[in-house]
Length: 396
Ligand code: PMT
Image (cartoon, rainbow, N blue to C red; front, side, top):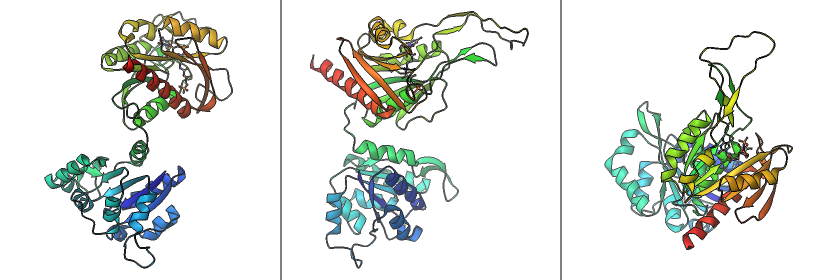
């Protein structure tokens, strides 16, 4: 991606250095354009060193080619103004072009993201809010500031959105919004089966597969709710999250969400069994053996079949042997649109790995082998298929 980062006169200008750095690390090309006041906060040389490209502050400075704003506009895929101070927001909202940054923005017809950062009173001024609303109405994307303690000591909204949020919106701005309007529930991670106040039984699921799907779906514009089992992972930007512990809690959460959803992807590994009896007090250590009886947990997909019949439903099958036979049976029993059969006995795939290899089995019986790849890539493949089914449903 070719990114122009516009930096303006806010104390948060130093955070743009990190943004440029991360963009470069992710393999993007970056050009930095600074306003005169931004250069009072951070030296252009800092950005030049990080971006590996000259920084433009003044369009009439020596060495800046004539019509540089036009050639930059033709070069860029996306522009992000971060931090955007109240002054540049006001100028952009009224089509002013009195410096290189605002002139470039007027000449650029690609996506422009505006990430405000300023004192909370300045941010909440009606005039600033009106200017932001005006920019939004023109198609600019506003990346809302965060709340917290500001440089001036005040507490409130006005902090530049965090790096992850800025990167998410940059990527989203160049991603086809093929799932816009699609309301998707994704499950991830393991559930736990408590034994006593100290102990529980669980499995090796890390949540990576489900979290990757949620992230990629949000990038494509879906409204995503992640039902997460016991995992310590940050919530992907743009995704709502419901945390659960047990299989019964996961079932209840999905049941509550599905009436307002269009699809469900069950990448979680819910515990199939739970101790028959929960011990209110810690089981004391005694004897060489401890025998516990287990009883079956509800099967979520089977239990919810009646309310899932008009939704797009995708399951996973985690098997160490007879993968395809077992997956085919689950596909039918659970009435799925397709099932992603992953072999959990493979080396560095499935549980805990960043990679997965799978065979997708569709309702009509045809199969597609997906070689080992990053879970983010498999997530993309799964979402392509969902998009395909969605189109077919809409045509009917
Ligand atoms: O979390 P990671 O470390 O990234 O690993 C990813 C994964 C291996 C957990 C994931 O890719 C995966 O395979 N998830 C499904 C695990 C599983 O429970 O498989 P299963 O074959 O037992 O169940 C079949 C389907 O029924 C699954 O979609 C499962 O979510 C669902 N299920 C299972 C048990 C249950 N009580 N109710 C269910 O609905």
